[in-house]
Amino acid sequence: MIKLIMGVILYGVSLFIFADEGEVIKEDVCGTGNAIIKTTDGWYVAAKHSSGAYLHEGDIVFGNLKTFGFQDITRDDDKANFYIEDYEKSISAASKELCE
Image: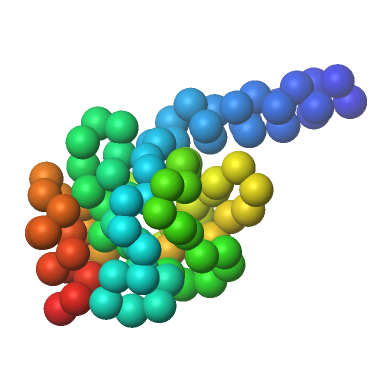
């Protein structure tokens, strides 16, 4: 039983260790719920809202932000599912991805 509990804890911790961190810098980009997230390593992520909570400017989020496709994105009080369209080196390029 203790091994199971430790395994679950280590799994949960490993998700945060390997997750990207970012800040939502634009919300509702070319559609309800779409967001641009700036990662701590300087990428601008074009994320299309799929389900769950909406993100707002200033939110700090965690998840597989630089993995294409549907991804769960977590903030301190909730989580949502977004489709990661692309990640770019400029905010204008990320915005273009969401608006095409």
